Length: 434
Image 1 (cartoon, rainbow, N blue to C red):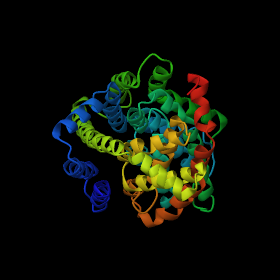
Image 2 (image 1 turned 60 degrees about the horizontal axis):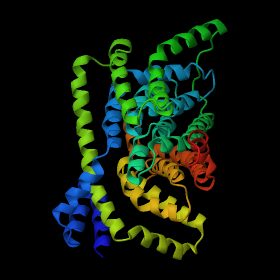
Image 3 (image 1 turned 60 degrees about the vertical axis):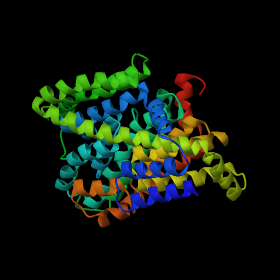
């Protein structure tokens, strides 16, 4: 009963608009008081869970994303990708999808990706008469790819929650992320085909095209070195995710100030301050959720949920996975990616492992699910953020958004859920057995 009331408190607080960190705090206080836990339990749980070097990567990637967002890096990446699209009608949708994937591969944040790439691509699409409902939907749906293309903040949190390898969680999401990137780009191009006013890039001679491509590539080289530093350092075994993020920050500051000139040295203080506030909110949330998850495990809640699912589905593993996916999508609709990961990981990871699902496959399933939840109406935080950035009402975004969900996210989710090799092939290739 106490656990049921705690979940009710959490959901009611979120629905009425209470910030997620306070919602989890209220549920935590209720559980601690009603189940008879004392303060020492709370403090020792928080300290033991938070005393982890893995978590250092979170504030570092937050700072990196903030510097990149304001430093002009996104514009260089967009121009580089656009140079190779040619005169394809609707090609800016593919540019948006790929740019979001590349930007997300550096900063690991869907919200930062949407804010940066969206603010660059929206004016370009408006100038070329793109239907802005379609444009905003493509940008909003492509932004969560940053949760899949490593390094991903939510995969760091998932690995930390389940005592898993961060590097292996990163690799498990690469192929689903690439599939989703390609599908969203194709879907955007197809949707733009029926709009005759959509303009294409002006025709160039071969010499002019090569010259433009060369300039865009040279200009983008400093930005393209960032994912090489981060991913090359991590996968090459030279650096941990935290060290790679720190090196990338040191590299991004002169690149943003001296090369792309998107920000100035005196503005870095404000960037660090904003990042510190975001980090503080996340860390408080981590502490409260870890107390809740510890209480849930002590009260055998994951086993109770598994027994209930098996009763409903008749011991069918595939139906249980379907129910888990539906639950994760709902969580993604109600919460941001960080909150959803921290709530879902300690509950559903033991259930998946009990069913024989590889924990690293669960990492990929989680990433796709939360990404889809963040763009699924009615709550859909990225839906509204994309609408604000592109200056369009959500009504005009709804149909293209649902089209992308149906033809991009759902197929990717089905493949990731029911074909384990899709997420496990790359980790096994590089890491051996997982």
